[in-house]
View 1 (tube, rainbow, N blue to C red):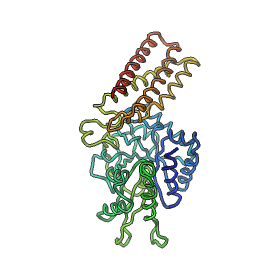
View 2: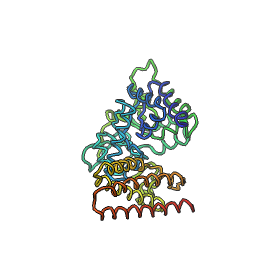
View 3: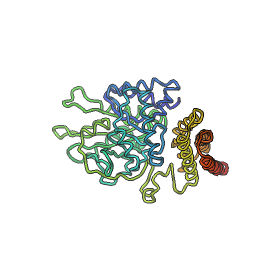
View 4: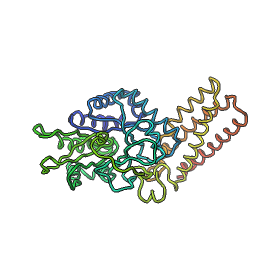
Length: 412
């Protein structure tokens, strides 16, 4: 796998070279599964060892990288559960997530309850979601929910500068120093794809991560113990403190969960629905997830109509399957639906500027496989003929939508 050689393994090499380096990693279960099934277990084993040594921690997420605010609560719960089960299988006991990374940082209040119920202590979202003064010395919670969960906001501007090579390692460290204007601790959060380092930007694992860690290597004669350091592989925090003399600023890098023990809790707030790509104008237009469900994108509209029908037929199949053969078809439909919720099919239809007719078609084809098996389960069950007829009409409607989307792909 090209990305493994260009990015994943080189990033892990950085952690081996700098034992003081720390990070918070998100890895979706579908990627863990692929690495395990296709012979890349060395990457999984190395991550597990880093977690056991305390250098990294893992987050929870959705297994097949779905846009959680856009799917039913039951599917959100299932994706979170599947993600945990799969990662425990491939990463072992080292997979003990305290925090949660929603795919594409797509957030809405609707997803909070399943995250709290699955015992996560914090969630990370895009900075655009922050509705209050930018938090640097307190950690907010989310209001009007059952339970308690902390919310951390990514510094979008700083993260994008790193992702697009607009800031080198030394510039990054200087930027962090300049942010500190008074006494006491502050924190800053950056988050980006692991593929940024080495795959999207060649050798960025060494030229950026390596430079940052080397610069921040603790001195043997240091008079104080540094908490711990962590890089930018998927998300992380930079922590500032004054020395007891107040004469020198010190930068420490910690795992996100450690911040819960360092900073006080602030008032509970209501983060805005958003994603990492959402702009202020998008929020004003209530177009919260423009790369995955843009109100002005006719292909997105049809894709979601097709998926809604697919989910409805699959649910009915599970409900009515009453024989071994019908249950086999219903189970196949259910398992295929899990993967059919993936976000890539919508991303590649966004035209901002992503447009890939094959990725769009593959997403629809996977959903059609769900429909095929789900309706087969319904037709072989003992449910009323009127139910079979109703859901056959839904399959026909989905077929019509499929043809409409396909027409777009031919002519655009």
